[in-house]
Amino acid sequence: MNKTKLMELTIDHIAYELMSWCNSDTNSFKDLWSNNGDWEKEAISNLTQSFNKKELVVKEDEQVYSTTSDKIDLLFNASSNIPSKKILAGLSCESLENSDNYKKQIICELKKLKESSLKEEFSTANVFLISLYFDLRKREFLHENNFIEIFNNLEIGCAIRKIK
Image 1 (cartoon, rainbow, N blue to C red):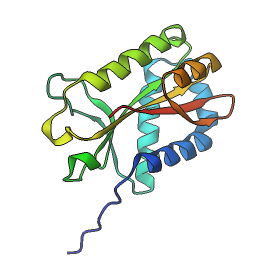
Image 2: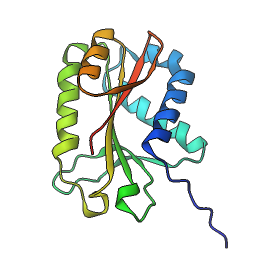
Image 3: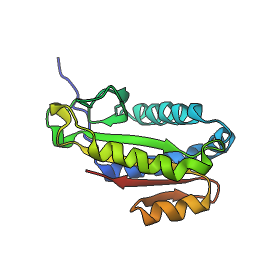
Image 4: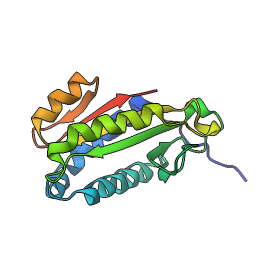
């Protein structure tokens, strides 16, 4: 039986797919602005489906940390036997309810992604944070904190920051 080898994604490829996803789903995002946690869960699920439709396998809510029960939002290249090929991503979404605390939320997420101990099989994985935001003031904050904007249509923006 011949097994098809899954394509290993790079962060650049993921950024391109994120940009395409944002472009195609912008109209649904603005309807989710008033949601809080459900917006993030909806975005993770929607993004995972978008990648998996293209046979770019993504897992969500994977337990990758060795010292905490926290889970990573997205895991790319999960089947790779080489830890450095695996890519872990957190996703943070601004909403109406968390807008005032969104900067603090980003700082906490960055700290968690930087400082949390990973299980051995993820020890050399690439780690990054994805931010979906609505407020242009958050855009400035993200730029000041080394995020790279990959999408902005003046209704929603998407920025990423490599952490490890």
